[in-house]
Amino acid sequence: MKTICLYICLLGLITTTTMAQEKYVPSQENLEAREWFEDARFGMFIHWGVYSILGDGEWVMNNQDIPAQRYRLLPSFFNPTEFDAQAIVSLAKEAGMKYITFTSKHHDGLAMYDSRVSDYTVVKSTPYKKDVLRLLEEACKEQGLKLFVYYSQLDWDHPDFYPRGWTGRKTGRPETGDWDAYLDYQDAQIRELAENYDIAGFWFDGWWDQAPHKEDWHREVDYRISGNDWKLSNTYQMIHQINSALLIGNNHHEMPFEGEDFQMFEKDLPGANTTGFGGAGISQLPLESCQTMNTSWGFNLQDTKEKSKKELIQFMVQTFGNGANLLLNVGPMPNGKIQPQHVENLKFIGQWMDQYGQTIYQTQKGPVSIEGVMTSTQKDKRVYLHFYGSYESDISLHGLDGKIKEVLLYKDQSKIKYKKNKQGVTIEIPENKQDSIVTVVEVVLK
Image (cartoon, rainbow, N blue to C red; front, side, top):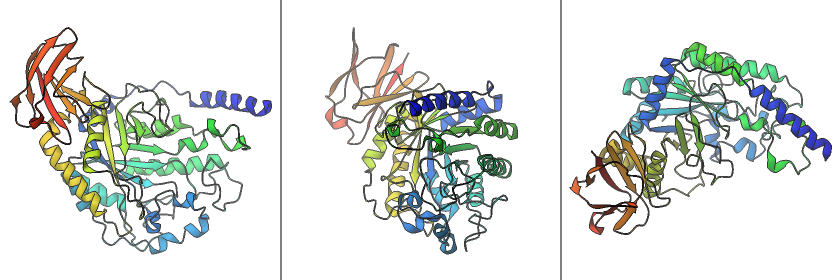
């Protein structure tokens, strides 16, 4: 036991050392891209790959212990003839989204674009033979949305992803491999994405697969499988040298590492830990929360736990009120179409954003919040209060320190009664003015 503990301590020291990178100074173009990102506030996440055929989510290869050799049969009957990139981008735009993040390669290793360094791609390995990423790139450019790419550093298929991490241990690959050769392969794919596609940045995932998990320290685990050096500084420097404006985020559930440009939070609000893998501190970088419309990222035939329109919009306003973007996910079906329920929800969200988008876009985290009741955003001298929980008609607020010019119900611009006192401000929202989903109140400061 002492030997294991000593190894873990040394591993932590090694990991900390290898993560240390030269001081990253973002370019002016990068800072401008960050500003655009924060102003945009709302994007669409697309999880889609050959795993959709099995209808059991994007982790099906790991969860069902499918050997890599057997899994490679899937691409041969992946032919999504109803995939329409223009229609999906139009839907995102109708929902009020300003950008799309697409899974260029997930953990199963198959590239959903025309990679020149691999034959395991949607173009070379499927009867569809079309570059999905290129189709989305063209549609985004035509309709005025920006495109980000998700790229999984974790790879359950590649033989050189060795030593194995915490997942994909039963894919039947030889227990040998060259980690540095895998990193060369990974960086070659990242380079071609940065050089050959008109993208706004990278959304990395899978770093955690090689990190020691504290909850597993008490188990009989071979700790030599973890702690591989990802050499992130090399990857990040390469990306910024190709195009310094490209934004980099990494879903490692830690505080941002040197070279990263935004911080993301998976299925959680910034700093929260309802999932068990959250709880990281909140940085000064632009923030983004990502969320599903049911419980799955990739298409899951049996996932009927759909979030209601009310739940989705209330999570949205909480995210925006925390000063973060929301990346809301769709998992297209094997035929390439988005589930009808998700289309309906997105159109409803679009109608809500048409009415209240000005309280969201180009705003910052507001000065007032009450957990479970309300949150706020701010733009210049206007503070937008979003009430999503139960509250009395008269409600006291703390944090509105500026002199108030007027308080309005945002929906119809009718005046709301308010009183200032030593504790803050008390406003009165008549019951007949309260919205069943979110009541938005506009406070105009002098």
